[in-house]
Image 1 (spheres, rainbow, N blue to C red):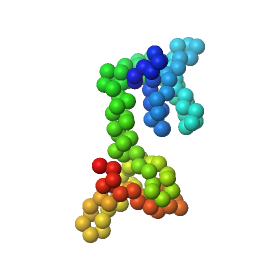
Image 2: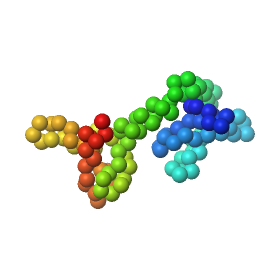
Image 3: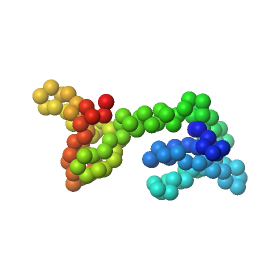
Image 4: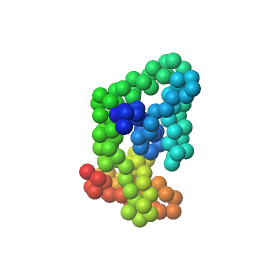
Length: 121
C-alpha cells in the first residue's frame, strides 16, 4: 500500500481504512485497527513474503484509489437507519415482475429499508 508519512500502510480487512504496518520484536509484520478491534499477525516466512508482495503491489498499482472507487460504488448507506453495509448478493432485492435489480435490503433486522441501486451508479 502507499506509504503515508514514510510508513507502510495496508487496509484493515473489516473497514478498509489505511492502517500502519507495524513490526514485532522478531521483525514480523502486523496490523491493528482499534475502531474495528482487529489485529492481524502475519506469521511464517511464506506468509510474510506474500504479505510484503501485497504491500509492495499496492504501492505500484495505487490500491487506495481502487478501494475508494469500490467503496463509492458498493458501500451503501441505509436512508432509514443510517446503517453502512457492503452490497452483497444475498441482500439484493429484485422486481417480482421482471427480475430487475431494485436495490439492496438493509441488513439491520429492525429496519427493512431498501437502498436503490440507481443512486449508486
